[in-house]
Length: 64
Image (cartoon, rainbow, N blue to C red; front, side, top):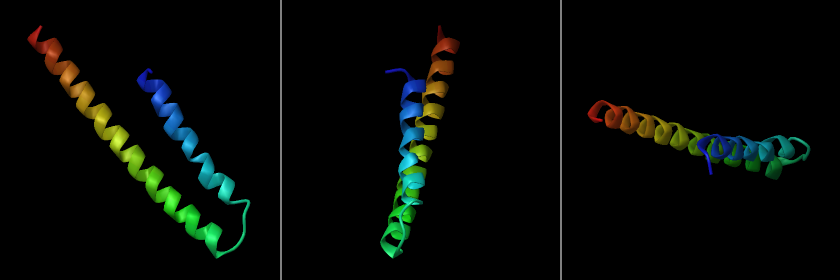
């Protein structure tokens, strides 16, 4: 899997939050908040991983 495909898969997860907009009631609102928090954390982790990957790649190119 390429990093772009992973990024797209993560972005598609946010569709769950949008789908919850169609539901009503406190349970749906709570699920929306929970999933938004989870996906925000997942995206944060992905960005950290990308930064680490690129830093290692640059370091490797400097040594090569």
